[in-house]
Length: 142
Image (cartoon, rainbow, N blue to C red; front, side):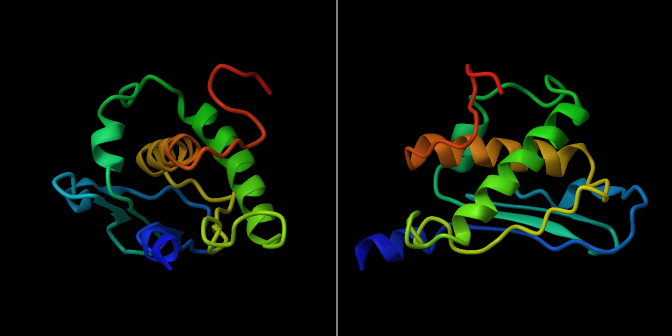
């Protein structure tokens, strides 16, 4: 039960729209003072919410925005999301308390740099915090 309560703090959602046009990010919606990070565009057609104690403190120790190109982040996120969603569908093999809900990440939608940056870093954080290894990780090629 203690593990379940701890895991309930983990949440990550991307609610995507059907449009493939580029979205303008509302950077005023980034909450950097708490452990909840929410990024949304002006029309709120999609958003990413990361609720994880310690994520913001960990994020400031990582490579800064602009270090990675957007194409790199999109490619890595596509692979991470595919692997993560496969694990959600296999609760007998992977801990269902860690892999709670599938991530709806549509590769035909341009989410913008900030969403891709935070999603990529959340996966790195998730790997490190919960000792999980996806298809690849930093230091290992794919």
